[in-house]
Length: 545
Image (tube, rainbow, N blue to C red):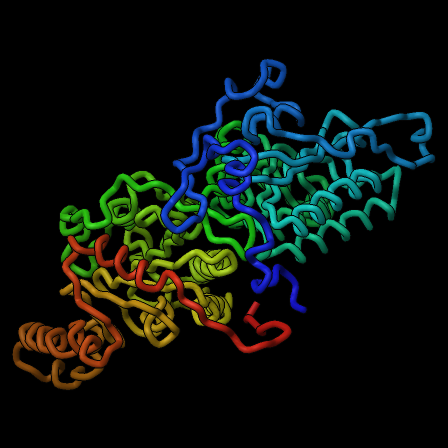
């Protein structure tokens, strides 16, 4: 049987929190509400505040203890520790005389927004938070329990790396953790919080999880540190420049979120989980929606310039269309020519993929293709519908892109959309040219509902480029080449770039007014809410990694 939860046993997998509370107390937990469908509905996640926890957990400085981090992460008073008295078995280098209850990591479970979540928090005050055999076994137990129970897991990393005193047993511990990360991937949400150092082999566990949250100027991660880099390459670079939070949030893309403080990082973890189901067999938690689903978005005409080559920030369009204050952007600083993130439509969590003409005209390049592909697959894994807002001139041309593998990386995004079986909706705002039109959730790659605004351009390429190729010889000999080019461009736009052609062939389901975008998307989402699509049975697809 494939890994993950068997959907046939879904009703017996886990009772919803609302059901459990009703049975035990006759009331609904303060974080949940009943909805008509019987699914647990969640209020907008409350901000985590230090005042929400017991005074003993309040930080005395800007660095929290391992235990305080857990107390702040979970709903007040809900954290339960396990394996508190586990100790190491190392004997060399004086370790036999050192008794370390807990072995430098605090493990357990609790409630986040009323739902059970497992977590561990490494304690850097105990042998630098280094990972030894017992330390690793505690983490492995938590990951196994979370996987078997169908509950999310949050990893709070703050460690100097492998425990040298324990040698290969420490390295083996990392391998066991990585294997659990992979086994749980796409089955339960996994969130990594980096509160301090993470170096060497330890970096691969966060990289294998769904989301990485780093703290600006406090956390860092790299395979080899500055001293090794200098010894091998003679390059001098400091810790922050090599693997700081800003580097991974803006340059490498390893960090999905960059928080200004530890408390903000913990808040972010809670917010991420508020959009996701506890596991891949449950539905994502709905939130009460005070924002009318038929609200007109008249401001969209102002936000999106009519001229196809004028820039704008698509984030404003996203916020205008989705439920008020519901957009949580992921990898905001990385590959900004596409914006991705979680939002809600009528209270239903969705994933947003939107080309951003405000950066590089919204082109798809190597990094933006990777970024969007990863997010599409994350949404598909946890059953979140995907909404694509399309305004894309194509893939970025150039030697650097071609030599860097834009073909492979662009194919990642194509593969992700084709593979996704969740509801897929799209709206073409202004333009969709060439291969990028196909890739961005078109009908041809499995889009369920595809819409376009009245002045959207759908073509192999823009009109000016097409005219230059098709009528280049004529224009060179014409008495008034500029006037003739303008005439031919207008003719090409009228006959080839209009959405009416795609609509006539069923490639576009409807041409809609910009102001109706929210209403149409909410209606379409409701129509495909129970979509079921099965992929062929196989070991795994051969995605172009």
